[in-house]
Length: 109
Image (tube, rainbow, N blue to C red; front, side, top):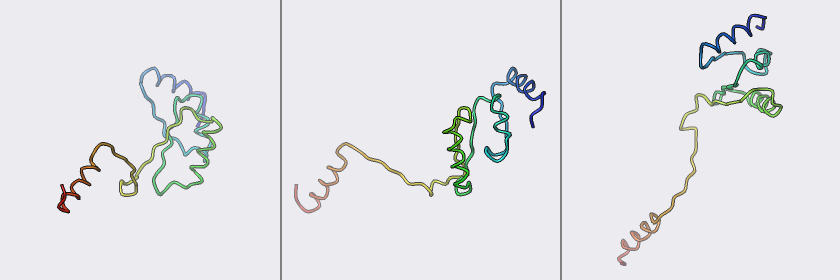
C-alpha cells in the first residue's frame, strides 16, 4: 500500500479537505494501519455487536495500551436497544406520594 507517492497525496488532501477518511484493513490483521499511522490524526475502530471476536477486542486493547495508534475512538455498531439494560435513580417526593396513595387507599388520611 505504501509508496513514495502516498505521503504526497495525503498532504495534498489535507490541504484541500477538512477530514479525510481512509478505510483500511482491520488493525492487527495487516500492517496497513501501522504504515499509515504517521500520516493520520485519529484511528476509528469499528466493532459490530455480537459479531466482532473477543480476541480482536483484546488485540485492540493491547495496541491502545502500547500507544501504537493515534487518538483512538471505538464505535459500537449494530447494537439493538433490546440488548441493553439501564440503570437509574430518582429523587424528590415521588416515592412518598406513592406511599400516601396506599395509605389513603386503606381508608387512612
